[in-house]
Image (cartoon, rainbow, N blue to C red; front, side, top):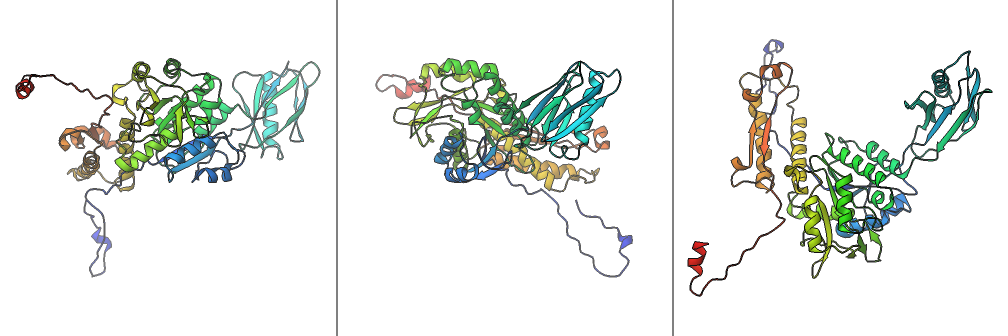
Length: 492
């Protein structure tokens, strides 16, 4: 849109030249080139994605960790890959319970500082809890370390939590007047599952962290409770599906001692892991590295995916014999073709040791029940497309533009979206012999009613067909009589 100058403000004679932008907004295709690995370590920053460049670099920054073999597996398959490690930790929690409400002094000692509250005549449990919460939060020595809050589960208990992850505190010497009690239960730290979930929910910012693959192999190999593994996987999927992220989570099966057959893997995945629009994929079984360590496969699968994206494009599935898993020599559980035929349609992506081919990721389905989000590459294509559109329009200067009545703004928005979609089609991410078969963009008065325009809303509707995945190739051979090949082919 040409810039309209307020001539009345230009009172001196002379030439005034102003530079502006117009036309289609230039757009870079969003990157999908990194992996985020959540685990534990003995050193390093908590809940902050930190890039590691090798297994040695990982050990230097985070010390001893059960995730080390997964880090090695990642770099074996993508030596110059972009890997961010998140050292998981949650806040320490203490639960304080008040007994029979009785008038008198209630006190407890937090990190050596006494905090007390005196209940007046005829107190209630809630009034005592509220008084102790206020006393903790008002104490100038204690309040910078912990925060007290009502746990909302009843009127007799409240929580004291550390203000910083990884910071421990003590609660001792609880006292109450005669006829009442004050008891304390302190979790030195929350459970390992809670730490993973807390890290997933509190470590990432879509404005700072680019799209990528989220894995947490330590959780699925180390958590013996299916409920805990489900909590972690659900948190991963929820984050990846959140607006602004649009990532994908690769989830491992439970440990080999628990999930040791394809049938058990199918039961585990079907009962515990789901995703509406394909933001989670499930992989089974574990693999054996060159030192006979049994390692969850997700780090290797993620590296293979990112390596293939670099070479062939993000529209390709993270599977197949072209990209055997490096740094491994076998699988922990053998999956036969007949077994995979049962579990593959149910979203169990099998890792198989194929004779002459190596250890191969031989499945690329999501855990979505929707036929539109069946394959991992469908999710990746749409995620990158959505992010590219967002980046273009967010940085392109269209927000807070006047919506003219001549359709100039509509045209600019539509043509920008068409240019992006064309690049996806040209690069093989959208299916169609011609662009018109692959995508359609609408942005006009037809889909922008006056009520929306008056509210400051402009709509652009984009219809796109991502490429499908060749998962099964059907080959038919015909035995024909001599000199009858052409005739038989025409009749077939």
